[in-house]
Length: 410
Image (tube, one colour):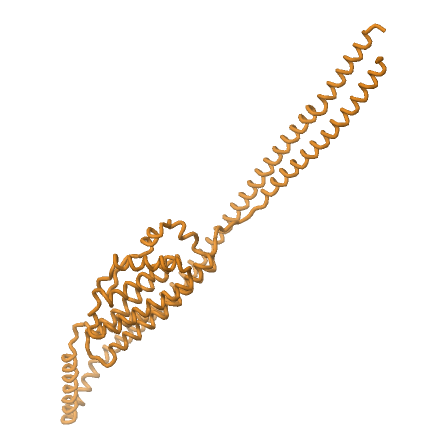
């Protein structure tokens, strides 16, 4: 094989090698560009500023649990009040009336505490435990003779309230969960019985968590969204507005029943006043002239006193008017100052938020610029290593081969 054939063969191999390398370079370059666009795209996504509230709505089962539990409160209140009113109807027994009032007061106060807890699960468990405790208190515990012969009627109502509550809970959970919770309630009532009509107790929720081997952070994962929290507060205020007047009225009635006022003495005092009034009227009828003189003297002596009272009342009214105006001015000033303070705080928050956004954007663009510079540097180095190094090596090898061919004897 002569030198010309070897030279032609070298050229063909060089051309094929170069074409293969060009294809590999094009493939790697495409892959590098794809990676570059991907990185730039992911970097630009950092520019999307999202205001996450971190508020998670209540799960549907807990929301249903809260609704059904609070609807049950109306059933509980109606059952207790109707039974308490029925056992004292037509009775003059002060003790029986007092006991009925205490049952209404304490039972409804405790239910308001258990049913309006922040966590629907805690409210469900604690309300269930209290109703079961009250049922056991009147049927088997220390309250079996609290209402005497009428205790059986109270125990029947308490048991019916427990059955109604459990029926509602059966529709909110699986059969296995319901049976497990029912076993816990039965054990808890035995361990934590009620001792008197004041129903002093501790919450059953912590014991339930231990019984079910659940951490509190797992049982209470959220307090609900803003609308759910507002609805919860609205329910609380509505129940407070409905229950407070009733409970205050029952407490006043209970106080009146056990006050130190003796009914017989009160009746005697009223009779004495009536007798004195009758005697005074008889005296006026029998001595008209003396009563006329007495009236004149009283008018003459009381007139200066009445004038003084009039003047004092006028001064007090004027002073009250001045103080009212001063109070109105103070309220206006406080309201203006509060509005200004809120405006300043809002402006300060806006400035801080703008500065934070500006710093965030600047930092992101700085990082992206640095990343692009690094990628360009790596790309140039890649081209030098992959493209120019083989090309230079091929030229150098070609020159070496040519020099060797020239140096051989013909």
